[in-house]
Every structure is written in structure tokens, then in C-alpha cells.
Image (cartoon, rainbow, N blue to C red; front, side):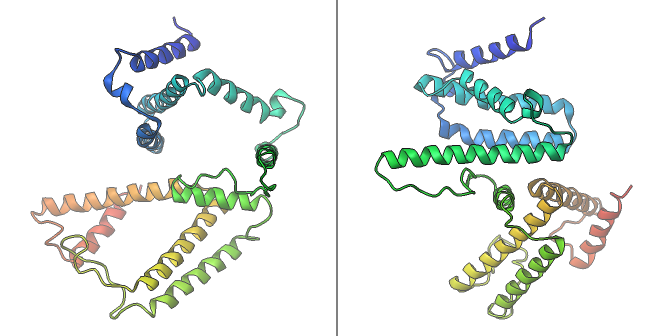
Length: 301
């Protein structure tokens, strides 16, 4: 019976073989940039398996995600920057350093205590990194820069997740709404601002594109107005993300589940129409609305 370590070493060895001369032509051609889309895809497949409680599938999806780590690590080893050993060492050090209540003398009796300790440790880590970066810049002749509390939050992650992280980081230093009522007031304020800009919308006002080829019949909106509308809609999203944060909810997961719910109900409606010998294109809204309500009702326990 193989140990966990032996199984891991076998996976590393297989990855090495695939990238070695005489290995897989496709694997050998890959680069850090070419693998990035697969990493994102595999991450979302892990989340989908969890949302669906598909535990049998989850182990396979986690394996696919681990493959991404092995792939990056093998390419890094080939170029002499780091190896899977460095990845594991840094992970182990981080786990030990951020759990002083387990591996040290710190005290944490509740998960809230752990979270406070965790956030404090991350703040210290960011200060050390910023200080090191500033020292390096100063040594190179540059002025000492003031570190940002938002440093380290990637702008390439999904926008809902980025908004959640940005507002969470700002909240750590007290830049936050005092309560949920403040958030709802902000939601009302942003909604009012959007409605105000809509007075400038060309007559007859915003309308759905309707049926037919996507984009056909689209209304022409002045560019400056489009930019302002986009900004106001973005502000609305940001407030909604903060409402989710206040409720300890993941906005990305919440929207993903709503997307699945819409897909499920819409496809149920399509199937009922098919059974009647008709299609969505030929059905009127008077026919579709009752079907949509039925789709919602049939999901209730």
C-alpha cells in the first residue's frame, strides 16, 4: 500500500516525464501563460462539484487542480526559479506561522479569535513585504514609497471576488459602513443616481434588444452617457458585494447559484413548450410568464 508521500512523488515524477525530452509534445509546448486558462477552468469545475455536492466528481476535479500546481512547478524548475519542494516548504511555513494557537503559545478559543489572529498576522506580513520592497527601492535610488493597504490584491481575479477582497481589506482599517442600514441607504443612493442619468437616455428610453439576431435593433447611446451608466451600474454591484460581505456570503457563489437556478427553470420552461409542440420563439410573454411561475413552483419542496 503506497503512502500519501509516495503517491505525491509518483504524480511529480509523471509530470517530469511528460515534460522531458521524448515526453508528451503537447505538455512540452505549454508555458505559464498557455496554462492559465486551464487553471481558471479547473478552479470553477471544483466549485461546481462542491455546489452540486458531487463528492465522487470532486476528488477528480481536485486532482485536475493539483495538476496545475505540478505543471507550474515543473516549468519553474526547468527555468531554475523554484520547484515543487519550494512550494511545499512555503506552504508548510505559512500554515505553521499563521496558526500560532496550534503550533505556538497564542490563544484562540473560537473561530472568531482565529480570524482576528489570522488578519493581524497577514497585516504584519504585508508590512514586512512593503518594508522590504521600499528598502530595495531606496537602495536603488528611489524614494521610499508608502505601502498601500490594498497591495497584493490581484486585479485579474473575477470582479466580484476582487470587490469583496478590496472592501474587506479596507474594512480592516475601519473604512466600512457602520451597519446594514447604512448599506441599504447607499444602495438607494446609487439606484437614485442611476435613475437620474436615465433621464438623458434617448427616447423612448432603455428597451430590451428583443428577439432576433443578438445586437439587432440596439439603441444608440451617446458615449459619455454610456460611460456614466456603466460607472453607476458598477457602483450598484459594489454595494451589493458589500451587502454579501456583511452577511458573510460569497457573492461569486451566490450569483453562480442564481445563474444555475435561472438555467434550470428556463430549460424546464423550454421542455414544457416542446411537449406542447411549440417553441420559445413562437410563444408570447402571456404564455411564458405563467410557465415561468410554474417552473418556480415545481421546485418548492
